[in-house]
Structure formats: structure tokens, C-alpha cells
Image (cartoon, rainbow, N blue to C red; front, side):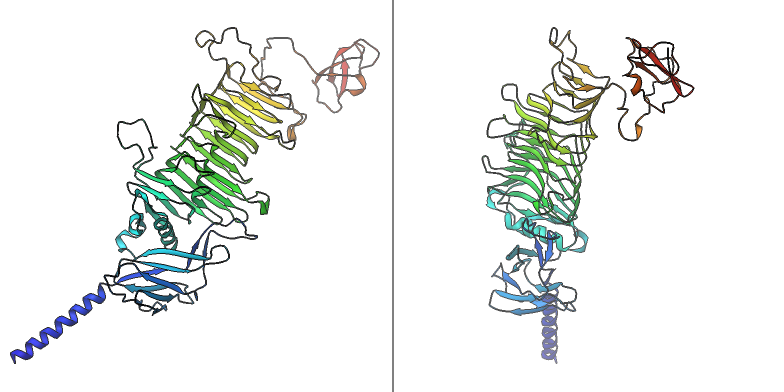
Length: 555
């Protein structure tokens, strides 16, 4: 009887042990994620795509110390078949396109065939985390080392694909120095979050001369992160992105597309250090650069020593707001433009509370370089020790220039040259300029209110300087152009009790060219009219003419 009880207890213990072992298995689930932003497509092609559910997913064992005991998840409709001692094949449910398997390890490597743009894909896939932590993931769980030497590219690609499979989340990049070869495509609804945005070689007392979290590009002709079509709600914050010095055409974040819009991208407390271009957004030629890359926000960020440009944009349908940020430029040379911001093409751009500059003995390039853009508004910003503050149409494209969309500068300080090489409307309010800041011809229309030129001549050495102000531009102070659009024929309204500080000059016409249909009270000068004639008669030496009773009367 006692022996029987012992056997029962032993059998019960084995059952409990087997049950615990079964319960200890981890769950792995996902989709056949393809995450890549192509540039050769000829139709709408999202950066996030999926291989067909019938695709065979190869599962490889990363820890041979534990047995390769895999099985499909109950009710998932997935099929799992062991192929070797260290590999197995899983296929997704044909209806849900989702695959699911269970295993004893915390991580397995999966690989499968992609599409015409990406032939094969490899990810290190982690078990589904506890429900209490879902939505926040750590790149080190995917194998990132962060020692500045190990290649962490696969870990980042795996983490991004895993977040894409969960339809978004926060990817934490803890303190560390992460080396990557680049081209990490970002999915929608993701936030990349580091431990700090201090740039490398910052003037701090710490002997560690890099950011707490830095991702460093180690391969040429690549971006660290890439954003493609059909992507929304992407954020990068509290991190430094940098390039190994001297890499050819290295990019911090590249955005490219042609057909389907991408929008709502933000950067907060990010340092872009030593790239060719820190942020590079461009439309593809398939649609003549007409890609919609919209609602881009850059805040509290730094762009340091980027050889071509901190921000470079060349897509037609795009709006940007850059605020509370800083651009420190390298010296401009024949081989590097060293610009802060270059908008080859863009929609609306706002630059606010932002500083840019080089060094007195090593001037940077151009703070704002523009070609074909909509409205540009600069508020409370400043640049110094640059070759130029602003250049419009540097390449002198004959088709550039637009009176409809103004360039507006409010309460800002610019001393380095502002150069216009096309027609444009320029509005400036309460800003401070040097005595010879502007180079502009008669095609530029200027509306200036409350601006100061040459600063204060008594304290900043401007005494005796030649003051060209707006150079040869057409100056229109506090008025509009009476021949523009729907305001044609409407007078500028000054209110009552107007006092002019100099003689009033009115338009001059010949008697046969006096404008018809003008309201009573309209005043011109008739160059060949006789005085005291109603209606005005030709044959005289000239007279003031006013519309009285619906006809021109010469006074």
C-alpha cells in the first residue's frame, strides 16, 4: 500500500513537471514583415509590406544548450515542421497571415524570401513580452551590444520589424554606443527613444566624450534610418546620430518616396553629428519629385559639422517646422557647402527660435538656402559667421520666383548677406540687419516695418558705413501692390489725419490715358492737360486731375 502511494506521488510529480515545462514555453508570433523603402518602384509601394502567407519561414536555434522543441500555438492555424536538429519551418495561417509557434528559448532567428525589392530577410525574433510591458521594447533584447565595436545592425532591424508586427510601439535604446552599417527602415507609429541628446565632443567635464546614447554609422553611402512611403507617426528623441568622420554621403535620416504620402514625423532632442546630410528628404523622379512628405517637426535638436547640409529637402509637397534648434557648421570649402538648411523644393517652412553659425576664421556656408518653395517664415532666429544668411535661387534657375508666397522674417538678427536672384515678395518686421546685408534687384518686392539697419551705429562700429539697405529692390512700405489679384483698383487705406513727411507724388497720365471708371475723389496728374477744364482737355502744360461727378476735372 505504501509502495503504491509512492508510485502515485511520483507519477503525479512527473505530470506536474511536464505541465510546468509546457507552461514554461515561450510564445513567438508575427507576420512575414518586409521593411524597406525602395527607389525603383513604378507604382505605390509602402515601406512596410508582407511576403505571402504560404512563404516558408526558417527558424534557427540560437541556443543549442536547450533542445529545439517547437510546436505551433494552439488554435493559431500555423504549421510547424522540424527540418534539422537546429532548424524548423513555420508557415502562417492563410486567413490571418499570422504565424505563431512556441519554444523553450527567449529568442530565435527567422529568415524567409522577400519580394522583388528585398530578396531575403533575417530577423532575431523575441518571445511575446508580458502583457504588462507590451508596447515598450528594448533593442538589447534583440541582441544589441552597444560597445561601439560590435555590429548592431541586425538587432535594430529585428527590433523595428518586431514593432511593425505589433502595429507600433516605443523602442528604447539604452545607454551605449551602437555601431551600425545603416539602412534601418522605420515603420509607422514608432518612437525611437534614447537616454540623451548631448552631442559627441560637447564641452562638458565628463571624460566620456559622446552622448549617453549614440548610434554611429560605419558604412558609406547609407543612412542610419530610412523612411519610405505610407509611413505615419514616427518619432526620434533623446539620442545622438553620428557618422564616422569622412564617410562618403552618409545620412542620419533619409526620407524618400514618390506615390503615397508620409506624414507626421518628429525629432526632439536629437544630435546629428558629422554627416554629409543630417536629414535628407527627397521625392523620386518617377513623379517629378511630387512626393508628399508632410508635417515634419524638429525641436530642441542640434546639427553639428554636417559637410553638405544639416537639413536638405528636395520634394515639392512638404511642410516643416524647425524650432529651438542649433546648427553649428564646418568651414565652407570648394568640396563642402556647409549649409545649415537647404530647401531645394518645399511647401511651407517655419524656422523659429533657431540659431546657426560657423566660426569667425572658418565661416560656414548658408544658413537658409532656397530654390523653389512656398511660404518661409523665420521668427526670433539668428545666424553669424556664415558666408550667407539667406540665398534665394543660388543657381539662377530662370523659372524660379513667386510673388504669391512671401519670405517673412520677424524679430530676427541677420548680418551676413541675404541674396535674392529671382522675383519674390519679402516681408520683414522688427528685425535687425547689417548695413549692406541685402543684394536684391528690382524684381524683389519688400514690405518692411520697424526694421533696424546697421544695428546701433554708436556702439557696434557701423558709423560711416555705406547703407544700401535693400539694395535695388522695389520698396513698398506698409502697403500692398495695387495691381495684384483681387485687390486691383483698391486704394491703400491709411485712415484719417494722415500727415506726409515729404511732398505727395501721385501717378502721371496723359489726357487720353486717364483711367476710366474711377470713384469720385480719385487724384492723378495729367501731363498734357489744360488747367480749369472739365472734362480735362489736352493742349496744356499739365494740371492735377480729380474725378468729380464721374468725370475727370483738371484743377
